[in-house]
Length: 521
Image (tube, rainbow, N blue to C red; front, side, top):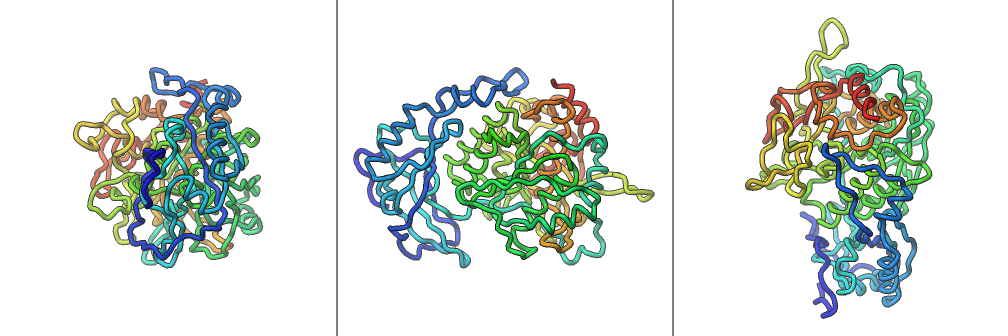
């Protein structure tokens, strides 16, 4: 990293460290054309939540006018861009984002960073270490700069059934899982659009058509949305990220066949993640009422600027009435960080997300009805529900007095507990789906997020309006709508009565949950 100009200051929270196991292989191509998203401060803070912690609702127009980026701040960034020969490609007032383009050399100089090519496990990416620098006049105006570094950011939370489990495991179609959880039979999510964030993979309509026909379900109405150049790129390999895309679509479309599904395809980078989330939340045309996210990474893998910006986007979602369902991770309490300490997955750890953990189901012998559940933890296959306590985000109001409590994340500080809720995730009791035309049994908390998204869409259909952030309602009356799970552990944590860092408040009692949410008009 070259020394910062005297007129430049480090952008707080922008520090990047070398990716573990990666090594620099040379300078980046100075002539490469890049785009970055410059994230700006809000014109004014959002209104304080009510006494239950529920967000104050705003129209999209009012949100953009009062809580988006100000014109003055946009013009300041445009002036900075002109000084460095950069081009303003787009301005998104509600998303508080200005997109700039230029060569790698121009952007490196503008933000005083050294861009290099890095390699890990055969994958090459553009990366940086240290902070981004900005002029003193932009300090307090710019909250984040995304796109200089394009390292792979997140992993899908799909988990495949291990070969040793193939003969002794159960498998359910998504409608059968919904039936286990008493999802209402008179609702199908009609009138609702559910957004799916996808950071890789794709689908072919013909493959989906065959799957839904076998279930006697219509092919869902699908809409692909490109974000930052991302697109529906099907590899044809059932072991690829196609599995994530098609699992999400098949669970959601089979359980709530009346919904319209919007897939936001974005690059698997911090910029792609933030821009994909923001594009879905602020889409004034498709207007999703639910966003389902089955991708994530442990909190230490993110820059602080990204954690804050995505959390702010979720706060905007709550104000706009959009429910965010996020997978809690599939690597137990360590979340695939090899330091022998507990970690939680982000974005599930954002208080604005409904964090979705995983269980294994047990059936009554006399029929395919639910007898009991336990924490999903298959040590042999390496899969286990994520869960724990955030080291970044404080506990939201509705968790501070919840039954069961939470362990402190550090000292006496009470962190955000993960997950909030759970559902069937163990591949041994997994979802019978089709990936690239090949039958598969999949699980993981990837399946739980769209399952909950389908249920929320049904609740929105019943009440005739989007419910938005549902966590305060669930924590206020958990016994009314959820089955407590008290068996098993995910590593550092054990299930127990009330909330716990394995399955949260429990799994859904579908009919009761929809009735509870439907009463909140």
